[in-house]
Length: 133
Image 1 (tube, rainbow, N blue to C red):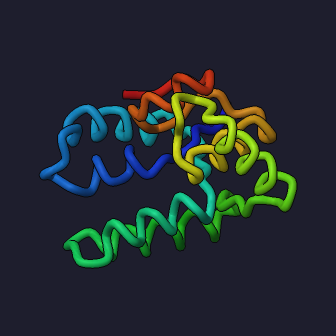
Image 2: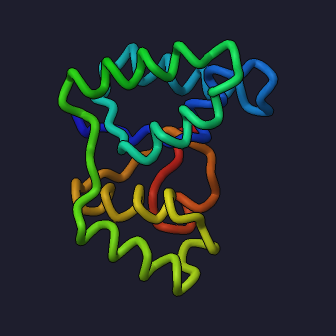
């Protein structure tokens, strides 16, 4: 079974009931959990989530996810090459002018052969990945 990549947009949608996508995100996340799909993310995505959740009730959820992902060996640290490639893609405005963390995610996903992302961020589609909600 191929792993899925966890993106900030998807995670925040699950945790934040005031988000515009909580139902779709929760259904997609539940499907991933039921199918026991391995979930992978990067330190940068978790940093984004941590910043977004700093003053919210789901702050603890972010911390607990980090512990689970990291202890399971599924927290990916970007390499120096990933960093440079992401900055180059950012400079060129690829994937609909996605942000830097998205570009780092794309580089890591390609390096690991991942094709699905738990998100509905259009930049993932523009980069050639399949979004899950």
